[in-house]
Image (cartoon, rainbow, N blue to C red; front, side, top):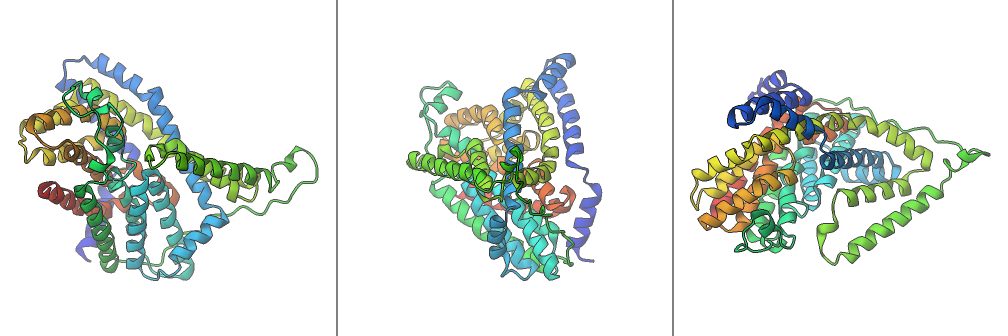
Length: 447
């Protein structure tokens, strides 16, 4: 038995479910926060309970659930199925499948993390179905990990939370309370900087190559992935209000209006990509669903089928909101960041920021939340040590995204759509993470 095979089997045996991991992290963070701070246990428990139901964060959770459901529902349309089948039809080997999935997912995720998340999950599922029908051998968990790799590159793209917030007017001075700093850091200095463009090229070249090599050497078998069940064609009813549900016109009309509106908003933005947010993505997904589904009833049937996959996010999001509240109240994020900063100099600060951001992301898997808490600390340190602010922001972004390959929370949509388990994809996602660490640290040292 090969080392890779033994490694995968061992990892599957020791890894609990994502929900168990969230509960374990909750206990660990509570006791560490209690030990680290002067807050009483009762106060921390109160902060934890209130954090579970933070209304702003719950709104974000609903956005993510809706994105999953609408993305999966769109995959059930005949139009989308034909597009994906056209892309994957020439693929005949496990290595080709792994490389293609990694490459396309990275490209989409660099444009928008939400689209990358859903696209990766859907193309993995379709490849599994395609190889099952053609009786071709496949390492389905490896393909699943390749479809998740977009979450390791997204924060350096145009939808990166820290990069987008830093580009807002007066944001830097507002969060640091330091008028000597620039009021904002534009995309030209972060997303489109030489350092980040080099990083992006390396990721696009190396990660799909690694996926291809893993596809060549890993064990394969003919998968048994059932084709997503399509509802039978619904006959038009001749009378009553139900005729509207089976009409082929009203849903498509509203969908077309929605798509036209989305295009208008994009044109009106005039190269300002800040309009691309979860609400905009969900609006586009809803409009496309209405336009491409046969009728309203068929759309609602697909929603019923897709919504089952939202259960993991629904139950786990509040747990991580509680962990975030504990870390904030107990001063853990500041302690982690300050600990690394104390050991830093001009050369090492970006590297230590990268490492600390990766650690914090395990406990707070939210790029926007992490920037709000950790951003002011690293900006102040960079200012004191004369480290370029764009570089330190990118260091945090790279660290935040890299440990998504270890933290299975954001993999929940992919796991739901593909039918895989976290312990099946993590042996491979960890290998991608190690390669990514080498790329990011090398770039931070070089630039």
